[in-house]
Image (tube, rainbow, N blue to C red; front, side):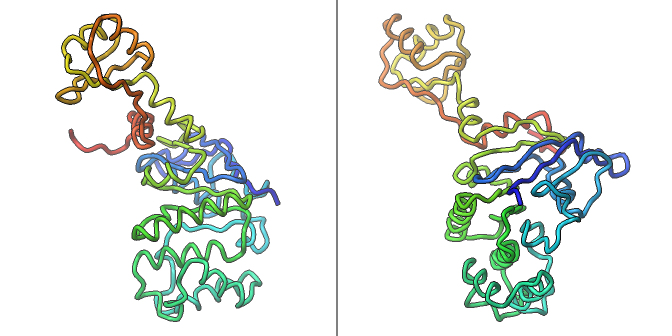
Length: 304
C-alpha cells in the first residue's frame, strides 16, 4: 500500500455553510505535513471525509490510493486521532486498546508494545475515565499506532501534554516520518510544527491557501525585512526611506526597513555616512508566516 493521503476537489455543505470549497492536497511519505488554518477553515471536515465519517458532495479522498471504506482492517492502513475523549471511561486504557486490537485481528503483544511506546505502562490498567487530558492523548496516539500503519493522521496531538510530553511527541512524529510513513498533523501550535513539520498545508474558508515546505514559507515571509541598530536613528530612516523602504521604529536604537535586502541597506548606510553597529535580516517565525497567509481567511476575529 502506498503511504499517502490524497484529497482532490472536496466540496461539502452543511445547510448554507460551505465547509469545503475544492479542498485539494496530498500527504507524501517520509515527512510530517502540518495541516493548519483558522477555526472554520475545513480541517476537521476534511479529516472526517478522509476517514469516511462524512461524505463529500463532490471530490474524493484516498488513503494509499483507495477510499477508507474499502480498506480491510483499516487500522493497519491508517491510524487516526481525532478526539482523545472518544473512549469508554469505565474501561482501562489497556482494555480499550485490546478491544480495538481484537476488531482488527491484532494480538495482546502489539497492545503492550504501543503502551510502552507512548509511556503509559504505569497507568495502563487504570480506568481511562480517570486519565488526565495528556494521558488520554497518549492513549489516542497508542490507538493510532496499534496497526503499525503506513499513514497517520493526528488532530491536535500536542493538546494537554506537558513540556516533556511535547518533546516526546516531536521526536515520535519525526521518527515515524523517517520510517517512510505519511504523517498529517493538524495543530494550532505553530511553534511545535516549526520544529516538527517539513511541509505545511495552510487552509482557509474550505480551500488550500498554501502548500509548501516550512523552510520555504518562512523564507518567503522573512524576505525584505531588515533590522538596523544605530545611534543615528533619524538619519538612517531618512536614507532608507529615500531608497524606497518602508521604515518603522522598533526600539530606542533600532529601526526595521521593509523592501530592501540586508546588503543593500549596508550599502545605503555606508554611502550616507550613517553609523550603525548591526544590520540583521529578519527571520520570520512560522506563526508570523501563517498569520500573514490567513489574515483574510478568518471566520471569527477578536476586535482590535
